[in-house]
Image (cartoon, rainbow, N blue to C red; front, side):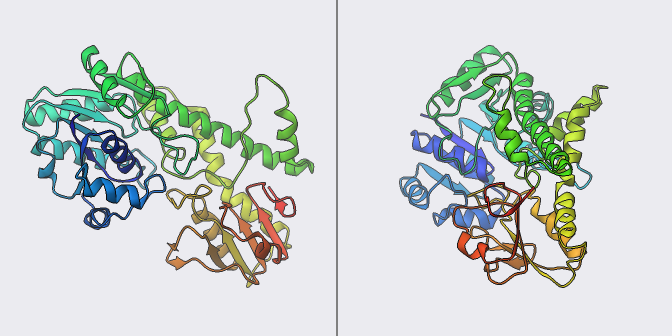
Length: 400
């Protein structure tokens, strides 16, 4: 077993740290967020996939040590980079966290080790933004590999152990080494010919979802214009035993992956002189869904909801998780407020969002359901005279 450092203790980094520590590796979880590390040190988990009980056991046994001191990474044999790769205010790739991880490694690692990048980014990131930059700073020939994260937050079916991993090193020996490492806590690993293939495969996975979600979001609008129920249309289409995969319309896309990863691919493809037209159009459709939802609510109220009490239900981007990153709820709330409605929100898994606290479902005039957690009280929702359901799960509510 190895001493493993995981840079970044967010939803990916903590999950990987948990899996590796549970498999017997000694794990150092580093994050520059001092408050986050303080909470982790007390055993307070911030992701659904790692229980408080499990986290405390790993800390007590010293299999897992959270730290904000980068020097604690100095004796690691393996470093995993698991930091956010968001978009900047202009919706361009923002690698500031990854560059910070490169600086950390360069400053504290003084011997050759295995460095693995799990952070999602465009093809060439491992080779050009990590390996090349670290070598320039240190003149150490580390071993490098790409293993893009595959985590489905809140899933009861798929986890780190049973989800196949894609890995590739800068050379064949490193590819084999990283494969053997992941097999200590993952059941199946597929090796590919280069880190660029691994990096692009992750972008393709989420671009596929982005494009297909945009397709059904556009179909929902077309179906409504025909007076046709999109849910019934999709149910009919999926009876075909081949050539069709169902996606469902919704308020847009949220989380770190789907709203972000495809833009990394389109950004890099433009640098290659190729326009990613499907991806760009999908981004536009999904980003405009909140505006369409507000227009539907307004249309059902003679284009006037001024002064009405409106409750947005579910501000997390996904059912049964508390993650609000890139949530379309932000744009929906802004649109409703622009229509001069009195807007509040309710989410049993989120306590604070958009400078407000979660409100109770009571006697509001309008409810707009963006995400439907299992904990949402449907009996209370039924008492609201107008409920617009973006999830398609409530037969008695107005639907997309």
